[in-house]
Image 1: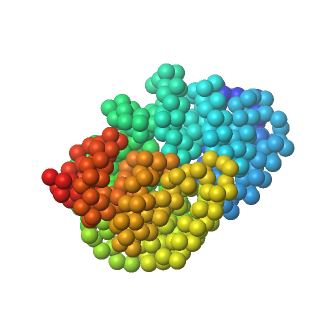
Image 2: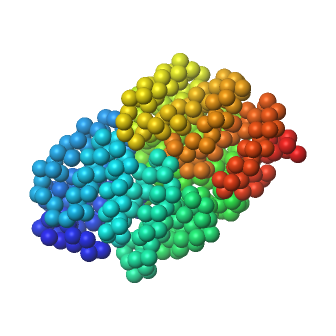
Image 3: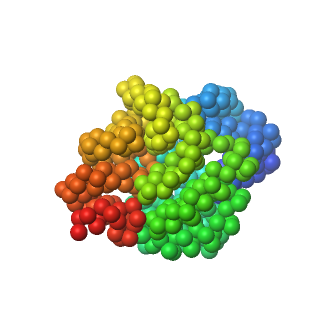
Length: 449
């Protein structure tokens, strides 16, 4: 039996396996690209070590690809056939993988939550809980798990900066902007390379419309993201988002070309279809077009990736963006095919995602298609009754704002002052400050006087 740097027991007699597993956890919470290499190293040192088998399966499923479900099932079988874990903590990880394979995301999170409650220094459980909850929109639950752990953390604890970054994001998404910014900036002081801390503070700044500060923050830290995994693309997206809101459309488009869809990047070549990258690309192009910028043929590549996800129901938020990309490229038949597949899945699924597709992702997808067809009445008909449910498709307030921008654009086009009055009241309630300073809403607000 070995212990990790926080004193957590590991059911292995191999010091090399325990050390490799510790490196895997450090890599994962630091958003590095070599996490799987370290898990493989742990299993090479001790093939009977059940925990790395389970974590490998969990991380495979986190890529949101149906093709990885079969390999993840093999990891579950290997974990169950390996040396029986001596701790409840390790057994929870195996049970979490089993739940995820059944699309029981909430059930898996309860396992991570139980681990974090008993072992609040378990950064892996905290990070996995935050990841899964974020993609189903359960931000209050996400915040509560990290807040329960906060009292035991301090400067002397290994990984304190990574914990602060997680805590900052949970606080930001639930509107505690002052404390979120404090935690995020402290995390950057401890580790300027931490991309999640940079991300959390960027969210605070965009929600508060501190656009100039956001540009400065992301620009200054961007030099530190080169070792990160695909989160680096999302952080560049945040910089582009600040530029879009500030009216710097050409600067945002340059970031798209050189950072978001740079096919010369080894990271992009290794995984050109990463689900968050598809979201980033579609969301940025759509925001630019909403502001009147011609993005040329850039929709073509994104639509190709979107078409490959027809029938993939692992991520409601991504599915809505895929419908948008296909419609934007003029591929309406495939966009409609995607929505029909989403509807069939929503009617059949008994896991966590089916209801979220029905209540949020499908209305968002249908509205995006109607928006592209210029059917503004239809956009309002679909999105107005669904607007209070959109959080259930996952993503952040700043990301989902794209669909609210479509709603505002349609209401403005149709001179629906009644809707716009209610709409802007609700947007301020969500925490979006200084709406009049955002290029996304300036015209509609001006029309209201």
